[in-house]
Length: 395
Image (cartoon, rainbow, N blue to C red; front, side):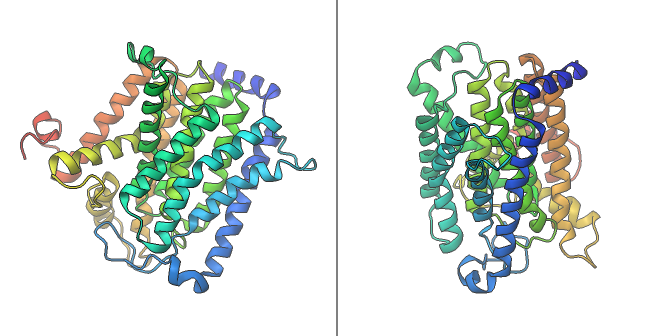
């Protein structure tokens, strides 16, 4: 089955995006993102008074020095470079005119979310509600400009309801806002958010490549290239942060790639996409439940109880020596997250093409997440699988 999938993907490639075009799309986004990041770091003495993350004692903070939070500008420029350079005849990307227009429309849709994030990075004065509304506006814009609203979620009974535009739009906006915020939530350690975006885009992009969807494939490649260009300077020492602007932009981009994959390709079931995106989605849902139900606090309040935060304090700080390189514990968290995500994505791509298998993969990841989380919280495996403990019915 795996061999047939690979052969089928190469056969489709002959009629879709070429290997050269894929490489050009990826490399252009990477080089522009890397160049802007380099310029950002080189000039930080001029803009640092505005862009530095001066609050290094926040409850969720682990870095010890001030770092610029304007990496999101490089990420946006990296993706923008793909349709801009693809316009010129001598450039080998080979983007069709229709695809270029779609990419520009998606970038336009991302503007509200990106602006709210970058203004917060520079001023530290944008409220959680304003940022939430900006992401919502971006999701609505994408649905309007691109028709990016979910026609199905492969749940019996609910798919009929999605034939009604208001319901479909509401479900799509909820999903896009959730995924966008999930990338911001996991953006707490060097490379975690970036690795998450690269892996989920690789999974969704590969599925689209298999069925010959060149547009979504190029969207995924552009996002991956821009993110890797940023990671080259960010990981492992954290020279530049993507900030809220970068996290919202990449989160929105990843969410829309998932939505467009489902909208444009009926061969790909929605549960397979959810299996690829499961880790950040589980993180944001569990964080909301933990804050609102278990701890009776504001849903948007920052804390140090995310899975990656617990892994850092309970594992990295005890098992990794940081005498010579203080940043190594921070960077080690990305290895933990990347291993999980890469494994889940590969399995989802290979065997998640049926709804039953994809649902099993999602449920298995939820089970693994809760088990590891309870183990990190309690310090042992006792009662980690007890529903009474897991759902907070007893402390």
